[in-house]
Length: 327
Image 1 (tube, rainbow, N blue to C red):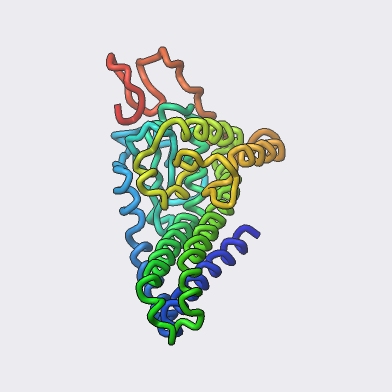
Image 2 (cartoon, rainbow, N blue to C red):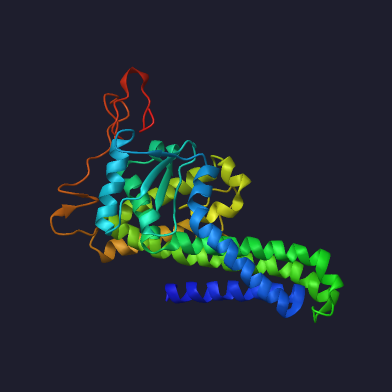
């Protein structure tokens, strides 16, 4: 049902884009709008991952620079039946994460340093499993398309101010219709974009919980991230709000309500759904020969903060006391 709903919403977004083109220039405008949408989506298909990662100053890490974090993602990807994605870290104090890429073969997952500092190993595993679920479901491509179409619709609506009123022979609704389109088209595009994003989060939560093996890990992580996201600003996200839907929790300040214009479902609703899933699964999900997110044994509990000889992300902190794969 969620896939059907997403397909319907994407079809609606495309129809809205063509309607804006028709309002702007009749049938010719509709065809130009369709070609423009195809061009922008083609560009986004090939370049969206690099653009977003660069926007947030993400840097790629590997087994030598962040061994434990990298190994965690590798193990989760194997459980999900996915190729190993590229792994990135973002130097940002707000705990959060996102996935990007046009397909599983060209995917990337990114986590903030704040995520690795604020959450336990198990909670981070839940978050990264959620992001890999987005990759497995091709949500990263879907969200790129909706974001691109929404931006293009808004741009076309702005063009209407300058050209629509003088093209009444092509615009059957005249100046009043043009003004209405300028107001309603971007609003409708935003509603569709938000609906697509929210419909995918519940699916990714459920699949991510099954990938990591413990729904309550992700549930605990969502609560911590949501509490921190509204206290710790994410300035790159504030400057680029169109990318907010990519994160596991809305990184923008002031987005608490499960309203029509929220990019994410209400966090409490997501946690409740994961708790219900945990009860269905008898407390967890296991595969033969494995336990939790790491085959061959359960993950160890996070070390106490006083133990500075080693950190859960694979690098000894030494006398400096810094924690994380970047230390």
